[in-house]
Amino acid sequence: MPRTPTAYLSHAITGRARLKIPARRGDQAYFAVLAERLQRDCPGVRSVRVNPLTASVLIEHAEPLPPLGIFAAGTGLFLLEATPPPLPPVGPALRSAASALDRSVRRTAGGTWDLWTLLALVLLSLALVQVRRGTVLPPAVSLTWQALTALGLSHLMNSKNGANGGL
Image 1 (spheres, rainbow, N blue to C red):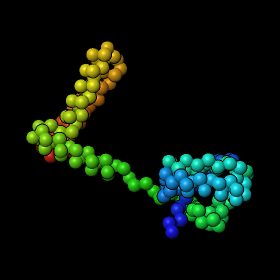
Image 2 (spheres, one colour; image 1 turned 90 degrees about the horizontal axis):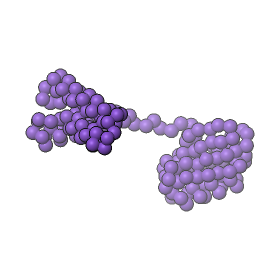
Image 3 (cartoon, rainbow, N blue to C red; image 1 turned 120 degrees about the vertical axis):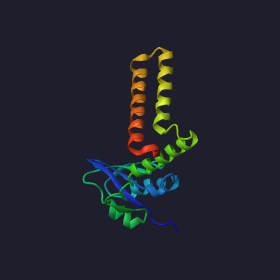
Image 4 (tube, rainbow, N blue to C red; image 1 turned 135 degrees about the vertical axis):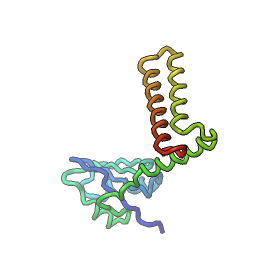
């Protein structure tokens, strides 16, 4: 028997509440049963809309908010938690991926280029495409400015950290 999924109150305003049930994302049968049971058995619920792709349940209700926790405990359809678990920080993962990409670019280019230099080249190429199309301001100028910023960062990081790069 599958484990009872955890639901989180995503938001609640006057007359509306949204639940998220991430463990059942994409499970159309589960959300159809849940919508039907909430509509039929939970006092104060006026309408229920579900989106299995986003694991979301939108509940339109009378005042006050229906006792969703009691309903959930009684039906076994979900366990209502006060707050969702914190999301993992994205910064370290991005830095790690950028460092790996930088090492790959350096290795492939024999140490003559780094990620920032490659980024500058891509941005300058895009700027030239914009100039050729006749859209100099603002796309070409913005892309050129961003390319020069990337080159400046490349120079700064390489001068601070030697040939090892700065990511």
